[in-house]
Length: 191
Ligand code: AP5
Ligand code: MG
Image (cartoon, rainbow, N blue to C red):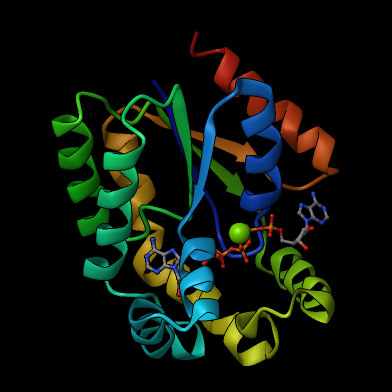
């Protein structure tokens, strides 16, 4: 299985690139953010709980997110590979993820980390916010807080994969196609 952790700050282009990678490599794409927004949109209990936890740009709890991942892994055991977009986002998530994949007889192939400066991601999110309808794109305070949360709680996850020899940094500034080319080169170099 080709299991890719697509990493990077809010607005780095994870979702955009995951769509393209999914098509090229014939693998699946799981965005935990999108799953949670779907639950919120349908007004489920999980969605209500997540919306409370995420208020102001905070993370959802590890417990909630790991529940989503466990179910996904269980339901997609025979997939040729998965792009995990926006997960893992904390150290406990990364550790639990390794255990879950191990039990399923697979492992993370690589972490591809899109590197994009704060000003660029802020601008991208503000632009998207005009049309996305995403609650967390609407206020500059929430966007700044998401970037802070990324630095304080999520950036350490990169070190976890560095220690495992699975970390690859990718320049996330440029056109969508340029960045896609860099990601594909990093994946093809593994084979
Ligand atoms: P999530 O949905 O994962 O949001 P995020 O990480 O904040 O990232 P975004 O989806 O905003 O950006 P992206 O990197 O996908 O970029 P995109 O391709 O859209 O998470 C949302 C929330 O859910 C979290 O804050 C948290 O509360 C919760 N959550 C999710 N996972 C969790 C977890 N594991 N643990 C706990 N909580 C969790 O691009 C952004 C914009 O830029 C788009 O408009 C795009 O068109 C544009 N764009 C993309 N590439 C380029 C380019 N090269 N040039 C110009 N514009 C570009
Ligand atoms: Mg996204």
